Each structure stands twice: as structure tokens, then as C-alpha cells.
Length: 86
Length: 380
Image 1 (tube, one colour):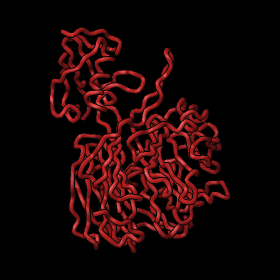
Image 2 (image 1 turned 90 degrees about the vertical axis):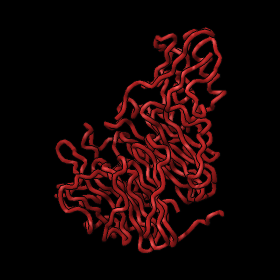
Image 3 (image 1 turned 180 degrees about the vertical axis):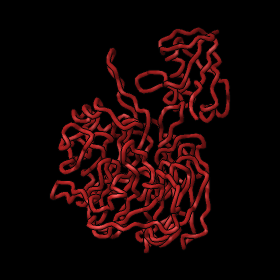
């Protein structure tokens, strides 16, 4: 499936804003992303598998709170950064 | 060409500057003039600490995060021409199912290991955590003896600073790679003689006027701790409650800040040591009265120096603004080079870098308009 990537993570995806990845859950999807783009997962998800406070992962437009959220091959996955900072 | 380590620092100076929005590098000529600025590196990243490896001057490490992305460490083996991210940045173990685990939110401090252990680095984090790398910062493991220490857990429950709990001032005894110190804000100073497997508190004599028991064993707030490389049993500490010195054999902190002018006080963040004279140290006082503005007292910034191990202090403000300058200099943002006379450097939260080529007597500014300066370190 295609995953939309936010600009702060372009340094991992060679500048691509959409990349391919596989998985039946968000956890599997992020693990696959990390295999393809080493280091990207830890910037989004902490060591306790919690999505970092200012990151959001949307599945078909709905925010997912947990990594065991099931996903399908046709689902629309968007990783976004929440508004914050200054 | 491989650069040689310089024992007495008679060459150009490279200054590594970490800020709230990226890293910059300032390089001088041999006379410490003609400064040129390079960067930014990692524009937009919060660069908490930017440190060179004294064992290999080609190697630089950066502790970084952004407002959104998690904390990590970047490494360069060519003085910043190229960077590689740590394969496994500092991180706590995954908690067992149903248990609440900790997660690193910030790598706050980086310390190169002992001369005899090339490739070893230590990192201090928020929340309190000590991590060690044995491969030049590529992979990091928690120092379990510290991260699982019962007093460390009490300090976690006790809380930290308004900016979160901070693990800092990781010091390695130049005589013994197993002998370590570190500071927790808040928690106090801790010491290990077995490479971090076990720890003892080292806070006797240090005041803590914010605790119910001012002579508590732990819970103190060291802002910056330094040991002198030529006299490693002498420690200096800039604490939330004053400036201290300890002769390790005595095991008790002496408040040498009591010898500071009363109107200025002895509150601040950094303490910087002379590379060759264990009796000489510099501090940058800040206003610790009432609501703790943490700015230069009376809006008149100054460095203070002692040349007699804290018996007396002298104000050094030549060239600094004499009014309406409300500066804050953080604990990692003041450094000394190895020249003779020693060059001093500090960075302010208002984005300025200042230097003195004569041990603080006269100051000039090197850079302005930077983001909030978090760290200033000398590389080679």
C-alpha cells in the first residue's frame, strides 16, 4: 500500500512524500517502513510502542491510536505531524 | 588528512554550537581571529548537545530531536561534512505487557569515554537515564546499574526541572575508566566506581533549600559539575543553591559561592574550568531571587572568575553590555579552549556567541541572530 509521509521524515525516504510498505497492522506496516528506511520508526513511535505525542497516523481518514490497528491493502494511510512548535 | 590532537591548543579553534533550531560551527585562524561560521546543520532540529571526540578530532556527535520527531544521535567522522544517524539511539527497554514503560524524550548530554576506550560514549537523557555506546555512537545500550538504581527511581517519582528531568555532567575520571560521576536535575550528584554498575550519592554539604530536609541525601539540583583533568579529585559544581567545590577525599561540598558579591549571588547554570590550573574556574551568574528570572543580575551580564579555588571571585565584564542585557547562559553553553592565555566562549538564549581571548578580561561577540543557544563546545 502507499503511505503518505510528512516532510520531517523526507530525510529517511530520499525526499519521497509517498512510499510503498506492507503490513496487516500498523505495527507491521511501521516495521516494514523501518526495514526500507532504517531509523524512521523510532522518530514516530517510542520504545513502548506509543505513537509520539505530536505525530498522527490516519487510516482512511480516522486517527489511529494504537499500533495493533488492523489495516488492509486498499486502505489509505497518512502519517502527519500535528500542529505544534514555535 | 588526519588532524592531530593538540595538547596545548596552539592552533585554530573550532566551536560547536547547538541551538533550538540547528547546529552551527565557528572556526578561527591560528590567532583566534578571522572567525568563519559554517552551517546550519540539521536546521530546525533541537540540538541539545554538539560534542567533538578528543580522542579523534574528526568525530563529532550531535544529540537531536524536533518538536515532532523522537530523539536521536547523529555522528560525523569527517568534521561535519557528512552525518549518519545512530542505528539504535538511546531507548529504555520495552516494558512487559500491562506495565508502564519509560521512553526517552530527549538526549540531553553526550560525553566521550575514557582515553583508553576509543569508541565509548555516554549519553544522559530525559527522563533520567544513562546510556553507553561502544561503537562511536552507532548503537546505544542502557547502563542498567544506573537505570535500575532504586534512588534513580525515587528521583523519577520526585520529578525534575520546569524543563523536565535532566541527566547531565557525565564525567569520566581520566585516571580510571570505571570511575564515573553524573548529575541529575533534580536528584543530585552520583558516583560509580565500577563503570556504572552501582552508584552512591555525593551530596554531603550541598544545600537544597527547596527540600523539607535541607541536608537530604538526594533530591538536590546540580546544574553543572566539572572535575579538573589534572587534579581529578577536585570537583566544582554550579548548583541551584550555590557554587561548590569538593576535594573528593573530604567527600563534602564547600559552598565557595559564599565568597561571591552578595548583590550578584552564586546562582547560575555553567561552571567552566581552566585546562591547566585547577584553582581557576569561571561561572556566569544569574538572578535566582524571588521568581527566579534566570537572567543576568540587574541586567548587567558578567563572568566571574576564581583563581584560588573559590576563596575569592573577580568580576569580568570588559566589553559586555553594561545595562539592559537580560541574558541566560545554559549549563552546556560556556566553554574554554586550551590556548595560553585560555580563550572563553559562551552562548546566550538570545542567540549570541561571545568570546574572550584573555581568560575573560575582555569580551567580543562572535555571532548574533542565532536561535536560542543550548550548547557551546570547543573541538580541537
